[in-house]
Length: 633
Image (cartoon, rainbow, N blue to C red; front, side, top):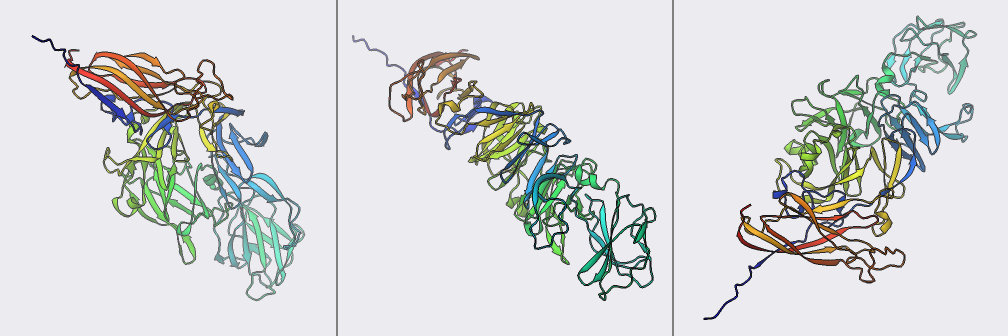
């Protein structure tokens, strides 16, 4: 009677060839194999492949939290603590010690910090008033408050000495001076201004001598002023105009109107918008005294905010948090409490040659939370709500009427961050970065979208990642295109941008701990014993790289093996004697290893690299395992 050897159980195979992002929203047991339930400091390489992020290097330290960074032409300004720096020079030392906002606007930089509105740029040097119009005037770079350079409006024209006239321009909120233009008479000496209780500032009074020629008059010699009554009394009546129908007396006076300038000074939110979607006006909001109001400036003139140029949007219990511009519409995002209609839409148009910005609709959606979370990924505006990162699209405006969630795969963790409402967003290349300021940064990948309907009313979700040990208070991109960030402790760091350079993979000289966990593998029959016998990984080749393979079984982690130098290639310019491989093969390298993980119902594997100055890219992972017998626990 013959003896037969029993056949070994067939080997199952699990191969992962695509790596999309993390899924922090689901239990690890139900995470798709293309995603990871835990992957700190990893990011997309090319779509479908992942790698360790680059590190950064400290380049400067300031005294105070980094609250803002701005550029005008070749000049970089840093808002740190209460100071505004140009290089090492302090331009201003009385800023609010909180994040500020700023934009370039027709050759100048306008800044709003909620305390005092500022402008930096080239201005004419003083003492050149007598130069002719065709003479070139000298300029200097300087920082001014908006009040210093405020436009002086002519608020009334064709006024008679005793009153009347035609209104022309509104009062400037940010400036206290105004002009009034009179049509003189032969006998009147007393000219009544439209307002009383004038400031002590000297009045400027001009008289038209002949067409195109004005004469400046002098107080006490040519006229006296009763500031309380708001009258100017001439020693000799100015007389009738030498040009029929043209005003011949112009009076410039000053009156501080309580709270007017602060309407603009206390704003810390801004955007650019205009008629027909142009970007020729500054819109500002964020004033805590008027949470549901915003103001806009004169076309191409950020020094003139008319007292009538404002909008009241919804209820005052719901603050304006930020703006998005979609096509030719300005979307103002409210905090909440608008019965779900938390996005108010306006257009810009001309009516009787005057700009108006009427409300044309609203969108149903979550209220915005963080003023510094707004950004455009591609052409899509993103913002933060209590349910994660949302987007509104052009289709929403014309049809569906709601905002869409874009961060489903990280919402469970993201929305529980303690500093969630104070987060800061920045769009860098194809990523929307959202920093918590604590070291954790979340990324939404604009090149990878999932069209599975994981959340209602969302067409797609972005793939997501997260970084650790990146304590960014604010992000920006420098003149060379390198990603930079400032911290609450006043440090400025710049990320390395050469992905092939070994020295790009450290954080100020410290190693970067990166890992990619695979969801638990339970084979074809979850109820049978599994024995995992072989693993193979294709890593991106580098001068020095490697991987540690860990396994979690029955809740406990243990290291299986370290690849050593098997994925490295040799270069005389970089030699690590602990990991040296004389191979000249620079293509991605397969690393295979026999393992023995016995009698488990499932196992979770982790690929890790925590080495200093080592890149770490994953292309493919494969497993072999056997199944036999029922798992008994």
